[in-house]
Amino acid sequence: MEKRILTGDRPTGRLHLGHYVGSLQNRVRLQHEYDTYVLIADVQALTDNFEHPQMLRQNVFEVTLDYLAVGLDPERVKIVVQSMVPELAELTIYFMNLVTVATLERNPTVKEEIKQRNFKRGVPVGFWSYPISQAADITIFKAHLVPVGEDQLPMIEQAREIVRRFNTLYGKVLIEPKAMLGEVARLPGTDGNAKMSKSLGNCIYLSDPPEVLRKRVMSMFTDPTRIHPTDPGHVEGNPVFTYHDTFNPNKNEVEELKDRYRKGAVGDVEVKEKLFAALDNFLAPIRARRAEYEAKPDRVKEIILEGTKKARATAQQTMEEVRAAMKLTYFA
Image 1 (cartoon, rainbow, N blue to C red):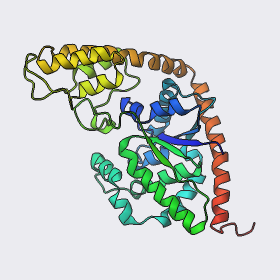
Image 2: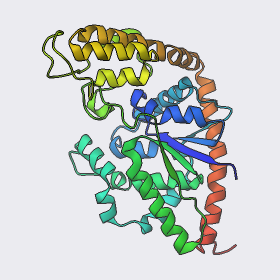
Image 3: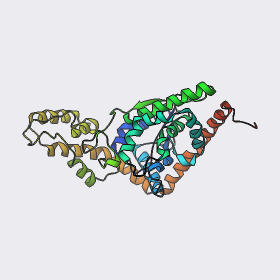
Image 4: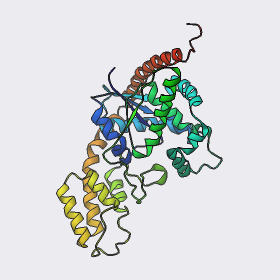
């Protein structure tokens, strides 16, 4: 069997640079080496959007535009809408018997996301079961590799544990997936927070126009101990230089800026102006491709439907094997 990748995102809005370095970059790079499935996890997004499900309709379209904009090839990659593959719900239910409540409560990714969302009426059961749902997403397509950001590693380990338990109980049917981190394990937010997050409002989006991009860059946190441009500054842990290292291809310029910054010979404004120029050059072709697809909504819809149809055929085949292994084929 050809090696497969499964990865994806919850459609909670447009994608940002953190998504790019955490996973999108690897998806684009590996799409011609692996049979690639990219899941738009709208069912999981309902766990904190259940009161406003209508928001997901536009978000599914926005996320697909970002996928195509960064260079995912619809002739190679299957873009899949989670709710349109009902077999995923069936496998999730079977997996629920293989995981304890205590295990879910200890999952650091779930704990952190619950903290960020600050649920007012208690945590929905659907949110607690997110790791189980994600395990079903990965295993139903028999993915070997899952490109993720560092914060998702506990989720992949949870999936691996579920696969081992399933295969021990019922026979070796499912593949134990491996995580693949991006070159930058985690991109900090523009506010200096350790993680770029929509809920924290500290993102630079892949679709940001130049005027919005400039505003976000110029408002970025730098070295809080540096009061004047002539003060020696810290480069390590400085979000602006983390972004320079990641997105500025002119490494000589970056090293020269770092040297001057440490000596107090350059101001934050100049450093940020050069970062804006580098990011604008990086995002320009992404924005252009996005605009092309945005002007062809019927083609985008067609890409989603074709990818989902192919993915469902794979899911149906896996579920036949799962039911047979679990002796659930009562009348076959």
